[in-house]
Image 1 (cartoon, rainbow, N blue to C red):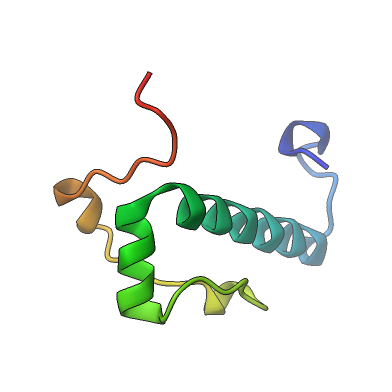
Image 2 (tube, rainbow, N blue to C red):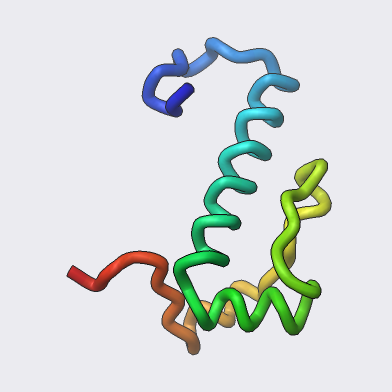
Length: 77
């Protein structure tokens, strides 16, 4: 299921949370595999990447970090 396939009010709140958790876990795994600085941060701060069982278990990174550190998971082009 893609976000663009879901009607604006087409999911119940629990289904929205399930979708969000699944997508954030997928993105976290992608960034961990494709961005060395992100991987080093998660290794140091959280002991590496593990899929979160719920939204409150997702790894925390300070927002201001993104003002000082460039974290790219894709080529710049």
